[in-house]
Length: 306
Image (cartoon, rainbow, N blue to C red; front, side, top):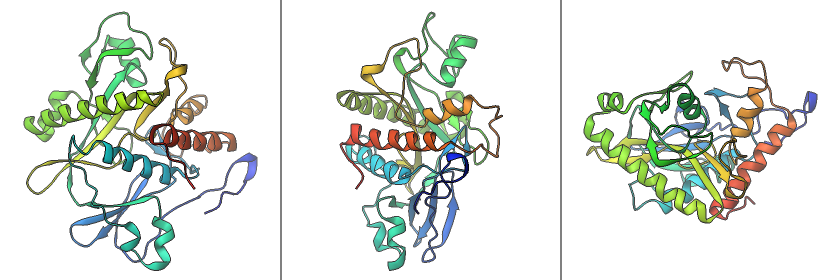
């Protein structure tokens, strides 16, 4: 699991991949590996894989899985009063074989098995990314009209909810709220929207005290057996959010960030059509990205990796 220098100043891959024989594997996502723990629980292991533009890159980011897990756990605890989450509190090392404990240490959680909703709940507080492109073309973001004359990265008058479909492969698709209501039902859609905006507001207010602006973020939800809404997956990490340093922010330009936007910006300089296979990353991009992830954990949660 050590990083080694490869050709052209790149780091050799992979840094970390889970390979547990003691539990049945349920699936492998872009970043996380899922294993069954009995009939009603799952072990989620966060790898060091990085996806950009919905494509998994060939070069992992050192310590990324540990950062994502610890930052998510921080937010799950801080926002537990808003909505139930999928964490069980069980020790991941207690559900795997002795020899496999190092694979799950610090980068895994044991969660309830729930029925995931087939949509992503995206909340935008600032005009950036695909939202900025939509606004330039139509004066709206995902069909939501916005005031005229807004600038790139400008804070919106109010956070807006812009759902998307979840793609197993390829790019996620922004959808209207009405379409979301048709997919999951009006009552569930309305509740998810309201919960998501409240989560964003509370998280953004706290992050601001740590010198961080949360430009936008996405949440995922599932339903329990009684139809209750439960927060799942990861929350408010550098993979699912845009974090900006407040002291370097100004409207009109894309601010520096503590997330994978650094990688996206590099990839945008290449002649790549954003379909697999993705290009290799230079060593300096890998190391700088790892540094940004670790700094986000420190700035927001006050935690440093050992």
